[in-house]
Structure formats: C-alpha cells, structure tokens
Amino acid sequence: MLLSALPAAGEHEIWYRYTVLGYALDAGGRPRAGERVELVRDRTQFSYLGDTDARGLYAIIARLGDESAGETLTLRLGGATARVIATFDPTNHTDERGTRVDFDGVRVIERAAAFRATLATFIGAAGR
Figure 1 (spheres, rainbow, N blue to C red):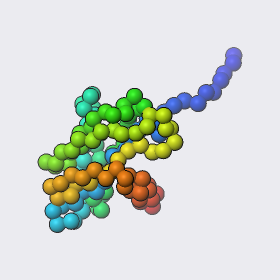
Figure 2: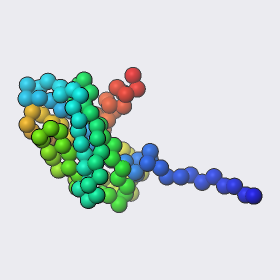
Figure 3: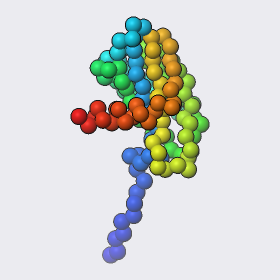
C-alpha cells in the first residue's frame, strides 16, 4: 500500500476567507459593547455572525474563495445596514483579504485603507 500526503487547501487559508471588521460606536462616540453584527452573502443568503467587544470592535470571517471577488455582502448592526463589495485580487494568495467598516452613530463608513492596521490590532488583542 502506498500512501501519499498532499497539501490540502482549507478554509484557514487566505484564499478561502474574507474578513470584515471595524468599530461600533454610539452617537456619543462610546463603544457599543456586546452587540451582534451580521454579514450576509447576498448571492447565497448565508449569514455570518460576530459580536462587538468592550471597545466596540468586531470581526467576522466569511468563507469567500477566489471566485467570490466582486461579490456583494450586506452588513447589519441594529437598524444600520451597509452594502460591501468583496474587493480583492484573486491571484494574491499572500495578503489577507478584507475591509474595515465602522458604525459611527447612525453612519456606516467603509475604511478599506485601515483594514490591515485594524486586523493587526484585533489579532494582538486576541492573543492576550
């Protein structure tokens, strides 16, 4: 019997995940701790859930492969809703994929340029 071990692509791989994270603040700028955030894949209606921490920080990791580039997602917190386009280079299997979306009072603001720094903050906090 000949057994062979080949690398298997899994959902833990960069090219199978898309992270949406950000901060949720009330109208006074205070963190909205312990609130549920929902991310929905519009194409499939599959829902991913996350909760805000004491700082109002949330992170949701969706299973989106290379073929999902450009897919529309809906993000919800309470009565606030935002549409997010999964924007990434499907040939890049090195860099994390995702965006930052903040809930600031009644406004929802996408800050894609702040994604990597916020992800580093999230990972650092999770490791403590």
